[in-house]
Image 1 (tube, rainbow, N blue to C red):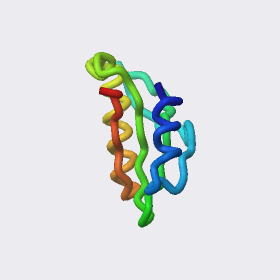
Image 2 (cartoon, rainbow, N blue to C red):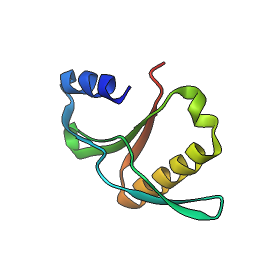
Image 3 (cartoon, helix red, strand yellow):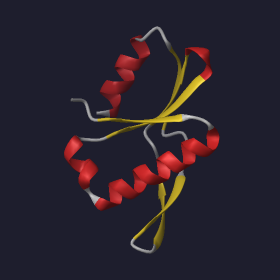
Image 4 (cartoon, rainbow, N blue to C red):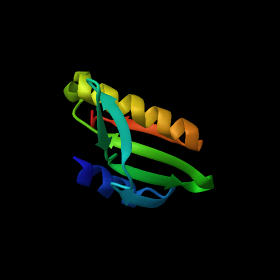
Length: 89
């Protein structure tokens, strides 16, 4: 799925840079510390930075994935970036 998204982004004129699995984000799940690797760091025209997670829609309901998305949103908020969850629908 991620590969399909990257191919589309590569063709988009507003996309300046794509970094695959750019960094790890720590998160808590069921009382244990984990590390989450988001799928893409996308830089758009005008210096807009977004961190993308590509997942099948039905996976978003899983508690572990919800914890990852919460951690992602907290991380990007601190950086002044945006997050985007892409489901390919």
